[in-house]
Image (tube, rainbow over all chains, first blue to last red; front, side):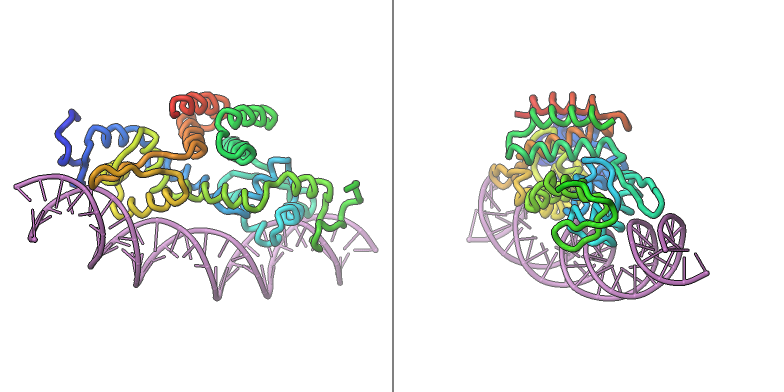
Length: 143
Length: 143
DNA sequence: TTGACGTATGAAGACTTGTTCAGATGAGCC
DNA sequence: GGCTCATCTGAACAAGTCTTCATACGTCAA
């Protein structure tokens, strides 16, 4: 664990390393594999423009499939497929009323990510401080 | 724009709509197509476990390619490809020193997203309020 | 019950995306 | 110069993803 001269060291397996200390620190700071996978799945869900639009739309409150499709300019079947995916990951939940299905956001973390991102989009680059503000506000309102 | 009885209306094109008002509101609240695309691209970048690990690693400060590879348990070529992508999207920047290349986070928004997510991972579900706190703190420290 | 409707689902196809391997580039060292 | 090393790049393949079409399911109204 102590510092060694650069240019040689290994990090468990036999991999080339320059700054062994740094590598060790980062390694222990890195979340478990499984956590990273979880997080990246969530980001992946937000990584599709169609899905992202659906979720942003749902920030306004619950909506049925056909309204979501209309509001986001997508086919109803496509929307249904996406919602299915989002439901499987517990990002949204469905409430059924007769033959209608109303969807709403179900994940506080995702809501937070969306808020942060929207705030960022609003005022170009700077974003951070105000983003956090507006995020906290909308989070309060979202309970 | 005024309310009409449910079950029939259209939203520009000829699409079935239940709550025309809601659809109209959401439509105007939705960011421009282009903004949504930008945002979803960023999320997509965070949506790969390998890339996500690289970025989390870079939260600790700048690192060279081989150390990143070692710390994240990935091949150096793979890492280089990913960094290239991240660089193209201005999420990271490279500083060259001799034959080494040192990468660092270059996007405040991405850093914020990472912080929020890590905070969320730490204390399971609740997350929101404390996530914002810790996020703001780390943002201050990150300038 | 029958038909229309909103939603859900399965399968197929085109399209992305990530990894790997092989080789190229350019900096440092003898 | 010639060698090694860190990084980059291109091509190819495997794997995953999104959309579409067709169809199935449950609900409501007549």
